[in-house]
Image (cartoon, rainbow, N blue to C red; front, side, top):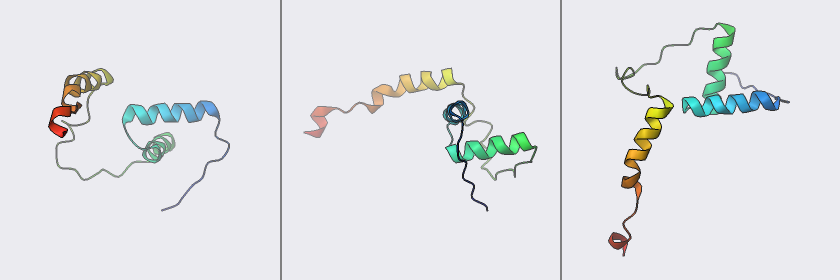
Length: 83
């Protein structure tokens, strides 16, 4: 494994990379690796999974926001229970 440091990254590239990271819900490192591999035409090693990949992680931003909104009530603390 090699380590790479990128200096003098233009602000537009840094912003676009950050937006892509947030869109994919992945780390900056993983996002950069995947984008570089895609741009260079290098095949990624398939990840071993549990067979549920087709069911998980396929939500649109709108579906995710709707889900977050619907479960927001479960994240509220009942102050009476904590006294």
